[in-house]
Length: 190
Image 1 (cartoon, rainbow, N blue to C red):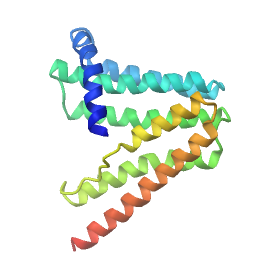
Image 2: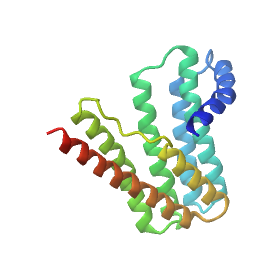
Image 3: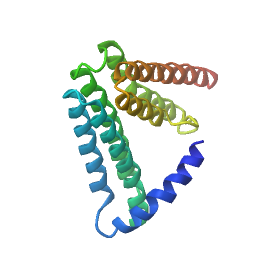
Image 4: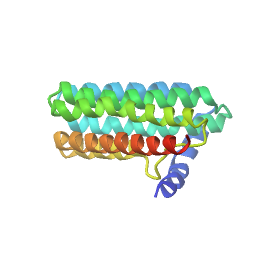
């Protein structure tokens, strides 16, 4: 499924990136994706879930576009990838914080998700570092993509409370499964 989405992404996004690449750097597009995330968080905080959902889609579009622009410009590298990953994490946290502050989410799942999102990424990095890069905990379906779909659906349907509970469940699954898998792998290496 992810491969089909990547093919679709390239068919739609690459032509746009090719046109933008001479004029805009990937870092500018990344910064704009963070601005879209902040706007989404503010929309949720102000009690406008549909606007927040549309801005999440804008953030996702810009997030896909920045990598395509970098490839079109020939400027891909570790720095841009690192910045992109940090912006992704902050964006997710901003969406959830906006929902929490706007009383569109129960505090328990919102906090669980906000703590779990960076924790699951840390577990990936820790296992990769401890195995010297031999093991990478990657899913076939991006859990960030799934979280975004859930939050957008929740915003568009005015069901953000339910969406945040679902996101919290996805995040708990990610943390627990990665932790257990990492512990089993590291135990076998002894």
